[in-house]
Image (tube, rainbow, N blue to C red; front, side, top):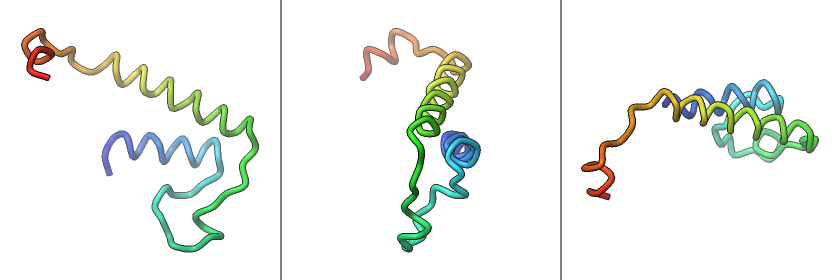
Length: 68
């Protein structure tokens, strides 16, 4: 599991009460009734995790940016 997948799974577990983000091919397992405030908390946690991950990542050089 990638670092991002791990972070998203932890957020889903903590804020949404969802055990896994893997498709399980069963409506009762793949669809969830979630309060809007829980969704907001999960989105805020994901945003903060992205900011932290971005701040700790090495910055691209001008040559790498020009290559794209």
